[in-house]
Image (tube, rainbow, N blue to C red; front, top):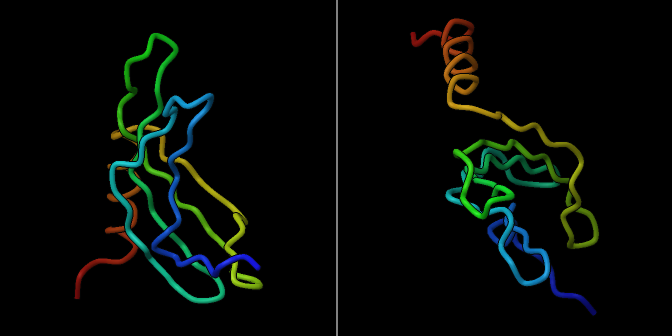
Amino acid sequence: MEHEVSIEDLSCEWEEDGELKVEQLDKNILTKGAWATIMFLFRDKKTDGSWAEPKVRIQRYKKQYGRYTNQAKFNISSAKQAKLIATQLQAWFPEE
């Protein structure tokens, strides 16, 4: 029987042939429950072996039978795009 996976165990890191290809730099759990949403700060390894600039992934999971399965994800591919999204969100949801 498999053990139940905690939301804290979820990561966007992955390896290929023992080499880290995606490094998770940070994680923020936005929602928990049967549907979970996590925002990851990560970077990819480039073909020359160096690391690319950090990106953001917002990933949505569904918990069923003690396991989380990926349902959807969206990558914010650059700091410029992240700032544009943040600016628009602040315009839509200004502080009271």
